[in-house]
Length: 418
Ligand code: C6P
Image (cartoon, rainbow, N blue to C red; front, side, top):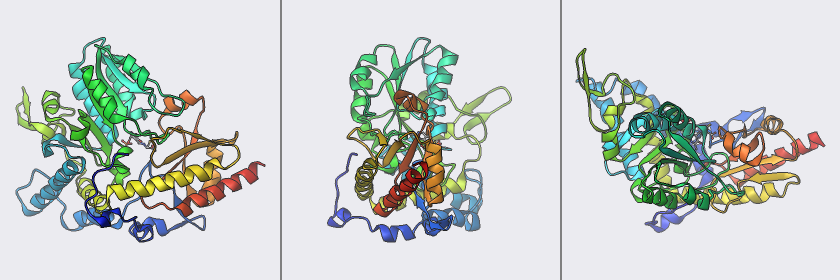
């Protein structure tokens, strides 16, 4: 994945994973009497103590509703809440804090854009391009908008190795293309898409681009200005933060063009019983009491990964990916899906004709947590004509020993199925 310049020699040093693991209390627990091996960070990452502490501190010492109170506690909570907005802005290099809208997560952020932008600005017959790699969260909201407004969904196919078929994409773009909704990294395969090129081609065709960064943001530097994407969405819980707090980045001029997503407290300028006017910028899209403690603790998560260094995290995870790919592909009957060279942190596979759910259940008894199923990406499964895969996904705290434990547990599966 793209790397930013590394500033000091120390920044090149590999991560001290043994020390880092101590930051994550849950990693020292056992399941079924065996040390936990957690290989499902793509679904939701475990939390470091600093994140747990930040959320607890909020409730224990600094909790009040935000943006509403003139009293001390409310001011403190508001300052901390807004400090996260500034942190997210810096983390993804947006131009202004006002371009960061807090949402419950990536799913809500896509729904917001489909609702407040697509439903308002697209005309019947306009086209939304969606790749075969997408998570359901980046498919269904567009389908709902399409159905309501008479829009056309245009699929972008993938190649056998799981990468976007760029020739097909170029051919699919046309004068009616208005939105390209595309993942930066597939949650089902781990494939990393050529996002710069995809955005450039979309813009050449006059389309806006929404990038689903839910997976990519945990494994690489994200710079929305460099990407020049129109919208970028992510969930805090996948980047070691709390659940219930994520963000939508949108270019300021687009937020201005968009209708409110939900009506309620704090998003208004003035309300009478006849008519309401709305705040400008991000505030227009944040109706009601937000996830205060979770948003505040998200800052601790972003500080945490930034202190470790996204480059060093990416390097470590890349080694894990290579190790896992080598180790698992040596297992007789095991097939890896998603073999494109550009990949990060996920290995998705089947093993002979053993059902992935059986594999998941048996390896769990060995203490190894993996996700099995369609991974909320059914079009990917349809592309390969399979119902499900086993998915091992790596976070910054995983080790090659974790992968050995998975390989050993797969050996147990093989023994059981003969
Ligand atoms: N993928 C997985 O196991 P939410 O649920 O809103 O935090 O994120 C939705 C989402 C959107 N896009 C991508 C690429 C994703 O991976 C996810 C969440 C999890 O793969 C849970 S289904």
